[in-house]
Length: 104
Image 1 (cartoon, rainbow, N blue to C red):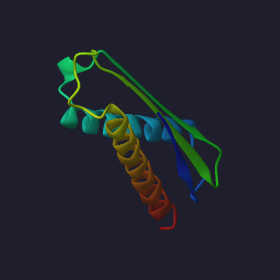
Image 2 (image 1 turned 90 degrees about the horizontal axis):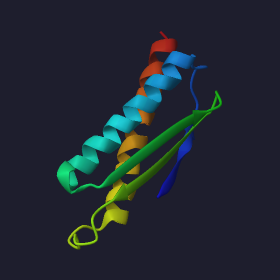
Image 3 (image 1 turned 30 degrees about the vertical axis):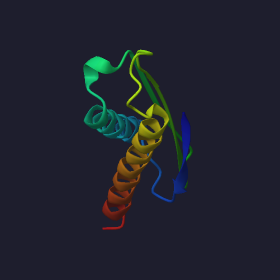
């Protein structure tokens, strides 16, 4: 499932800040997924977070989750969608914090 994020007006980010932004989003998505599906039940988990541009920064989240075919009690598309939303919330929060710091 691919979930593009909105844009966030902010200061121009360094390469390190862009990397941190992506890591924050990935951690948030992974934490949400593991809160909904036990790690041992997941056969494949690919989370890709890309941040592009500056003023505004565009963040794209792509999540692919694989479960064994015997698991029927999990709506994996819904979990991926919600995890992408959590990743976007986390990245937007990080960008807001950077923006606040830059205006001080």
